[in-house]
View 1 (cartoon, helix red, strand yellow):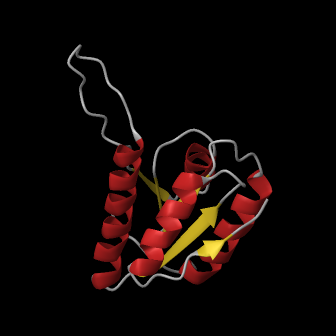
View 2 (cartoon, one colour; view 1 turned 180 degrees about the vertical axis):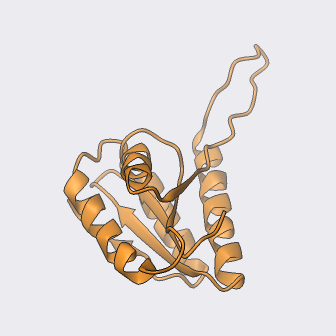
Length: 138
């Protein structure tokens, strides 16, 4: 894949404002004009993540979904706990750091609602990694 611009998105599972996502992506389309397609990285959750993936695919952008890795329980079923999502957020930010270190333009866009603990967790981790996350309210 060829990447012109890589944006990491995070947001609420209850996010339903398509227009705010499209406006955010419109700004990145301008940045990437004349280059390869932009790339969206997301955490593969319902709500904002999957919405952003659908919008990006409709624009023929690259999409990379990075799901949380659930540990197996003793019964063989899967159970996700908060630590799994924190670890996934670490992986998402580390992944974006690799792109930045390779010379790609990068951006973090957060779409939180009041109770968006995971989104704010990713926001903090991105700031610690010297990104300047954009907070977009619906």
